[in-house]
Image (tube, rainbow, N blue to C red; front, side, top):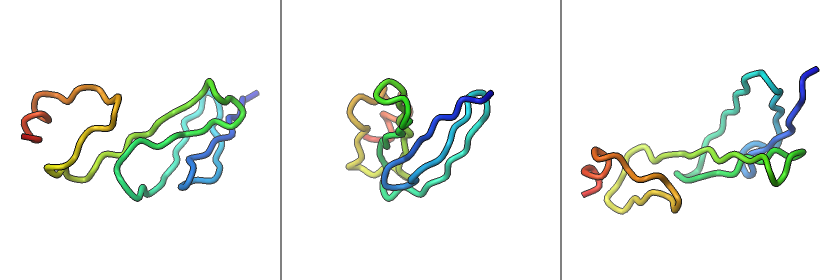
Length: 80
């Protein structure tokens, strides 16, 4: 028996199902770069996910979201 996780990606995907032990694919087009909450409806608040959408090209004013891991040396040089 597969356990189903009813899920959503608010503002982008109303609902989809993730089954234990099986890969799941969700496609969405973000309106901006950022971190988006992935909601697993029947396991809140303990089961969460946060897909990260990076900008196509970093501009001089771009900053990593709060709580992001430190940038690699090559990334740090790109932002100078």
